[in-house]
Length: 373
Image (cartoon, rainbow, N blue to C red; front, side):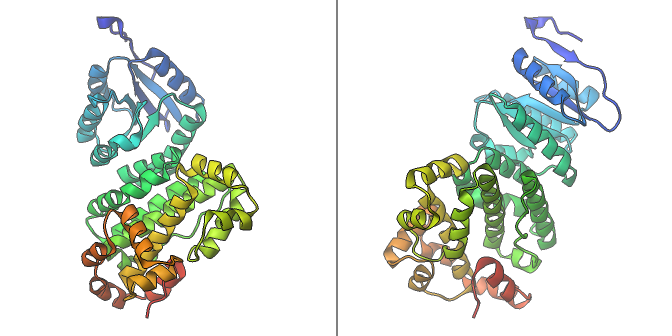
């Protein structure tokens, strides 16, 4: 079928064989549609059944044929693609919708999470990345559409560790809301996220899932810490896969994260030049080495504030900061609140029932490095 109005092509291709995901592509650029169709044609288990140039007709095509997967042009700033995606998900909420644009997914992440997108494809498209997205779809989309998983997956693909860190609170809150604040549901969702993201790394063994004790998930900040643990593991595995020189760097950081680590002694201990290390980190994490170290230290320090009565000075010393004032300054920079404000919101008394009702003490120490009194 071809549309003549505006000379914009819309093609309904032959229906695929059984057990094949049917894909609709809706993009105003005919070359982009042709490129995506050619890439997807080479991926086992997928067939492009719709190629649509006029976005305004995409919803009608979907209602008639209900394909399994929709790739739709975002068209920011008008958000046309998101509007259509929202309409589609209102009538068929298990559809996997991937937006595509030259815009970073993080820029629309909050709205995208609210309508439960499966993911985002960044232009210009890379055949290897498209292939990875679709193979990933086969691996974990059976776990049901998850906007949090879509966002985290895209942040991994975009190597945006900083974006992840600063959006962590919102992602965790969204995950808790979707789980109905039920700890068993949260545990399942975190396990699904962990499984899906670590499946991206092929032969690299995944790290242990951080919370096998669901009672801990009744504590709000623990969900954030779990997500950080998962994403940090995934970023580390992917960066080592990209350049094995980083293996020794992360081994050193894992064993010494609570020490006073500077860039100078890090490069000396790991036998790598400062310039080379900085370039590798920028490429794999899109942040500096010291930003990454501070993020890990601050996440660990929050466990002390949640589960112990340690003073700020005690925690600063535990985390390898020589001065309480500097530690407080770093904490505020990365958390956008003071330590006092954090403790007021998450007072240790609020965690006592959860800890007392579970066998959590040993687990907290083994995973997060905090020995409870």
